[in-house]
Image 1: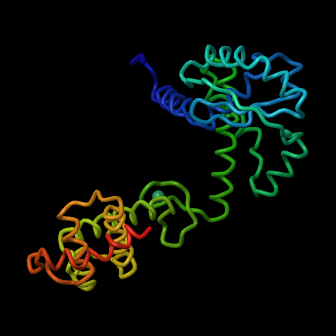
Image 2 (image 1 turned 60 degrees about the vertical axis):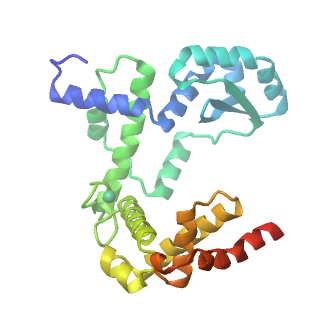
Image 3 (image 1 turned 180 degrees about the vertical axis):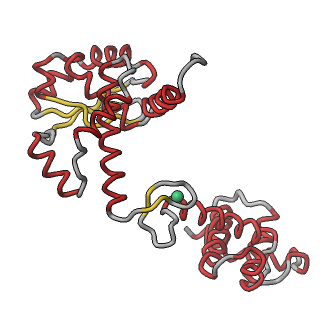
Length: 279
Ligand SMILES: [Zn+2]
């Protein structure tokens, strides 16, 4: 990338690069190219419904058109692969299905259902101006379309009282100002910390764990259960280590690992080994 770009151009370039690789964006670009790949007639009767991994799923009105497309399968894959080499498309799937008719009226109805307001002409102009420098017209249209939708959602959310998440800045309506994603991430980190502590101190009481890690009773229960089931699973598949055996025995009995004898561990876990053999 050239170094004499203005900050706005740099932001635009970064945003474009980022969006180009979004799955949603990839699907959009594939859909946009469909009539050039299969021709106008077939493109009227079929469309790309999904793009996942290396596979593109094509939907058509009926089996007659599916059959026609199936015959051209190899040619279509080659054309798509040549046009979008970075998508590594190797396979086509076919099924019947209709595309939702997106007439302007229906689009407006859909927006109303979702409570997404339309952008003003000035706002639309601003978005278009932002992407004026994109030379690929298909990509430019896609970017404008996506950004308009994103902006409309953003405005609707702000109007509805959403505020930026105090951690990631995404708009949220959570009363504590922390969005769902950040909460999930924090929970995962907490669960990880509790699990790590329990592995080291399997005989610790839940009060000890809560005090040491700063967690809740339910998180302690979750982490403990996870460790127990995971180790039982290892025993079932006969891949458990000696350390895991001791940890499990300690978790189940509340006896410190150093106070557990080998016999004690063996007798306790024999039950589970037998259960595994019964199955
Ligand atoms: Zn957040």
